[in-house]
Image 1 (tube, rainbow, N blue to C red):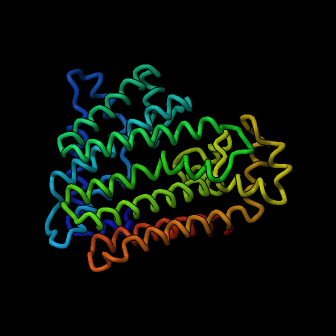
Image 2: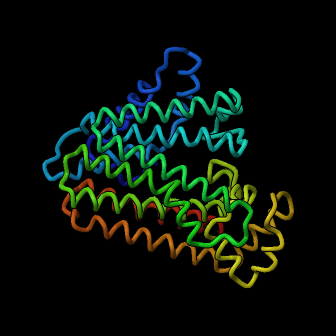
Length: 333
């Protein structure tokens, strides 16, 4: 994360520490057990992209100076708590045993407690959002709904080789892009930016989120476990056929790939399926889609090009492609 362009912003290190402190404070519960469960993944760390985007969006105001306001910090924390709560629930669904290099909450405390702890995080997020006004509260509630819709779309298409690209894009817009667009919008709202600028930031967050997920899905196919920090090829195992897989199904190796998919994969069949996706031009096609979303994200902030925070956000979008290029270069070395 050291080369993330957002780290060039003034006060960002102090603001990030404030985010961490606020996250920990927000999940303190009446019992030690619930506090431990709710703070488990906070202690495991994370890039904190969503709260930092909220902080950067608030800093896009023309007259902004100095550290982030407490409202921007708390707005970002509310979105991060929704993200964390969704991870708790995802790990129960996926029967995951690790998350961010540590034991998953469900593996450590059991599924029932993990679900309830995830619900607690969503409740705390809603409580913080309510303290920031009715607009932010309504926006966060709608974001939670969109997140659920995106996850359900993915689940209903599990192991379906007939999954359409439109269905895939609708799913990732809900489960990934909605959180990033809402983080930017909340930052703009609490930063008291003009409505047209809030809309630009929202568009940026949506396009960035789409690019972020497409890049992540490409990495799932081409990267190693060590590069990802999590098991590679997980989407093929879970039947979540992402953009590279869908493009490969339409290519010359589509028939063979289709014959392997449709059920959980392991061993040689899993390795062969990953190879088929990598061998054609499905990766190049998927990278082109990611580049289009990055271009959309950068274009959205062009009217704010004189604001340092907006420049940092635009560079963060391009950084996605730089990171992908490094992994691709390593994979072919």
